Length: 429
Image 1 (cartoon, rainbow, N blue to C red):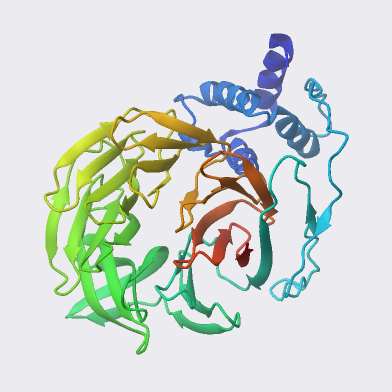
Image 2 (cartoon, rainbow, N blue to C red; image 1 turned 180 degrees about the horizontal axis):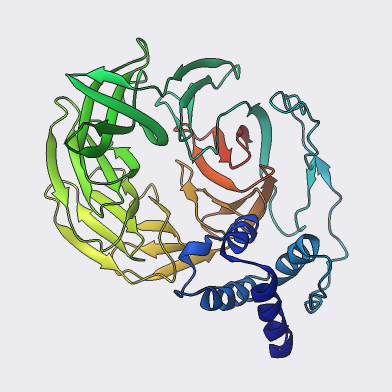
């Protein structure tokens, strides 16, 4: 699109969209409007157009605008120059074992049942197996038990536990307030983690409230009893993420207060607090050997810490956008970072090794072969990590993807969406 058309598009966006409407428009494109560079609406609109141009999404932007505001004359983006290969393979239908009628709304869902892969790419066979519906809100996190037999889905109001083999609902951890050790607690499913050794233990975000003050932290639940048996609180703001150390002895929590805290699982006492980020800490992950902890923040940095001493070992170069998700590769030599696009960063020298199209989420399979990230309009992209080749595109949700995770045995991929559903995909060789 030439500069004249981009200027025209900018003017039309300014005329027909307010801040809230632009936020909704960005949500459709899997873009976080509030994290676009710039402090004014004008500046963010300019960055939105430039980002869409860099990522080849201007046609989607214009298409959505024309649908929302059909009375306006929107500039047409330039047609793609690359010709479609003549030997493109035919569409291949998914096999599935779930009902495509949504029991929550009663409507029949128009799910795409096929995908197209260029002939030069190896085919990866991911089959949709179960679709979990009736959830209270956007599914902000998903996680598997250590044995891979249980799946947890978290929303702002609840955590639900599912049987991976049968798809049956096992239990709901209820969101009403409760007393523990003489205090009043509430909990939220916007952050959770299964214990890596004990399949009946899960950690969720917990909120402590009293007349004097409010704090955030983590709650440990015994799934056999459905009750909390330990509370860890002292964060001054919302806990966004948590992870157990590989040996299961400590739990790390990341918060909007900019800190990371390490807790002893056996006692619930705090081990240490990590300072260094200048914005909300959104995500964290342990290396497979438990020696390192990596964190990502709204300050657009990734920091690597010694998980034992709490010493900051390295701060990786600034990213263009807030860091929302990250994970170590199994060998511990690289970190995958999602910040409106995914980059694979070398732990030793901090250099970018590869980049992948994507948005805010990333996960790497336990065998280190696959990388998953969220795409446009509820899609999930699956890449070969070694070569960087796109292997498969899943139409996972009707709205944006909000969470994804591989099972510990690498046999399953779970996804959670803004459409208030979660899906389970079987990975076949």
